Every structure is written in C-alpha cells, then in structure tokens.
Length: 159
Image (spheres, rainbow, N blue to C red):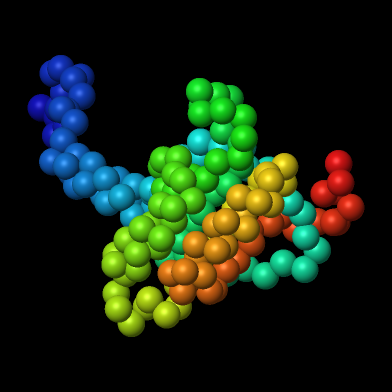
C-alpha cells in the first residue's frame, strides 16, 4: 500500500467568480472618476489665431465660453457668415445677456465676481460680430474677457 494516491480524474477545479462583482465595480468607479464629460460640441469652424505671449487660465470652471465663427460643413443650412455659438446652439447677439445671466445663476454667489468670459473666435471671423458681442457683455457688466489663442509665431496669422 502506498502513502500517496493518484488522482482519479485530472479535472481542473471550477473558476471562482466570487470576486468578479468587486472587479466590475472597481472598474466602474475608475471610469466614472477618470472620464471628463464634454461641455459642448462645436458647430462652427474654430481655427484660433496665434499669439506669442499666452497665459493659461487657472480655474476652468469659472470660465464662460462664447464661440464665434462660420458654421462647419455639417451645419451649412445656417449660412456661411460668422455665427455665435452659446453652449450647444447657435444664438443671436441679443441672446448673449441671457446666456451670461444663466451662467451666473448656475454658480455660487461668492464665485460670480471671478467669472471670466472666454471668446473663442475663428481667425477668419468678422470683427463686427465680435464688437457686438463685447457691447452686450458690457451691458451685463461682464468685463473680464479672455481671447483664446494658440501659442506660436504671430506671422502665422497672415496665412
């Protein structure tokens, strides 16, 4: 008689799935924390001009974006002239005040003085519409304005 017996059937044991829900929830929480949601999708052409002295904004959550440019190829039914985009829709100049008021209402009261309006203007856009937007911003007392650009040599703006 031997002390050691051979196994009768060389079957593999079943895989334990007890830790599978833990792994799934860990992945779920990771992607929830690591994913950044897009604020708005661009409906205009937005080739930013180039500047050589650029500063970064510190707090992106205190910035209100106004996009100005020609409608992109997907939105040609809106014409070929420069348009204003507020959030995810085209807007007229007189809607800028309501946009600023709604953005201010969505922030805490102590943060309202620190709000900055960022103008993302296409390099081919007409400056008349930019002037009209700036007039509307003055009417709502939104005087902190930032022009968004790319960093580079300013001679590239002539191309």
